[in-house]
Image (cartoon, rainbow, N blue to C red; front, side):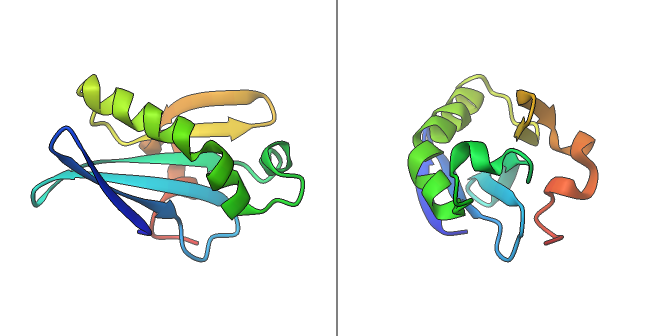
Length: 110
C-alpha cells in the first residue's frame, strides 16, 4: 500500500491496487496486529472517464481521495468493519459488500 495514516487508534494503509487495469483503490484498516477490514473504491471501466477524461488513475485519486477518506472515517466512527466497496458505474454510486462483488474487487487478482 502506498500511504499509511492513523485515525482513532486505527492504522490505515491505502493505495491503488498494483498492476490493475481497473480502478480499485483499497483502504486496509487494522488495530495493532489485528486486521479489521478492507474498504475499496471501485470505478468500473465504463465509468472511469466520468472522473478523468484521460482515465488517469493518479489524477482521479488526487481529485477524490479526500471524499473517500471521509467515507472511511465515517465507517470507522460507526463501528462498521465489514469489508465494503464504494462502487461507481454508469448508473451512479452504490455501497456493496466486497463479498458480493465476487472476484472483481479482490487484492489478489489484477
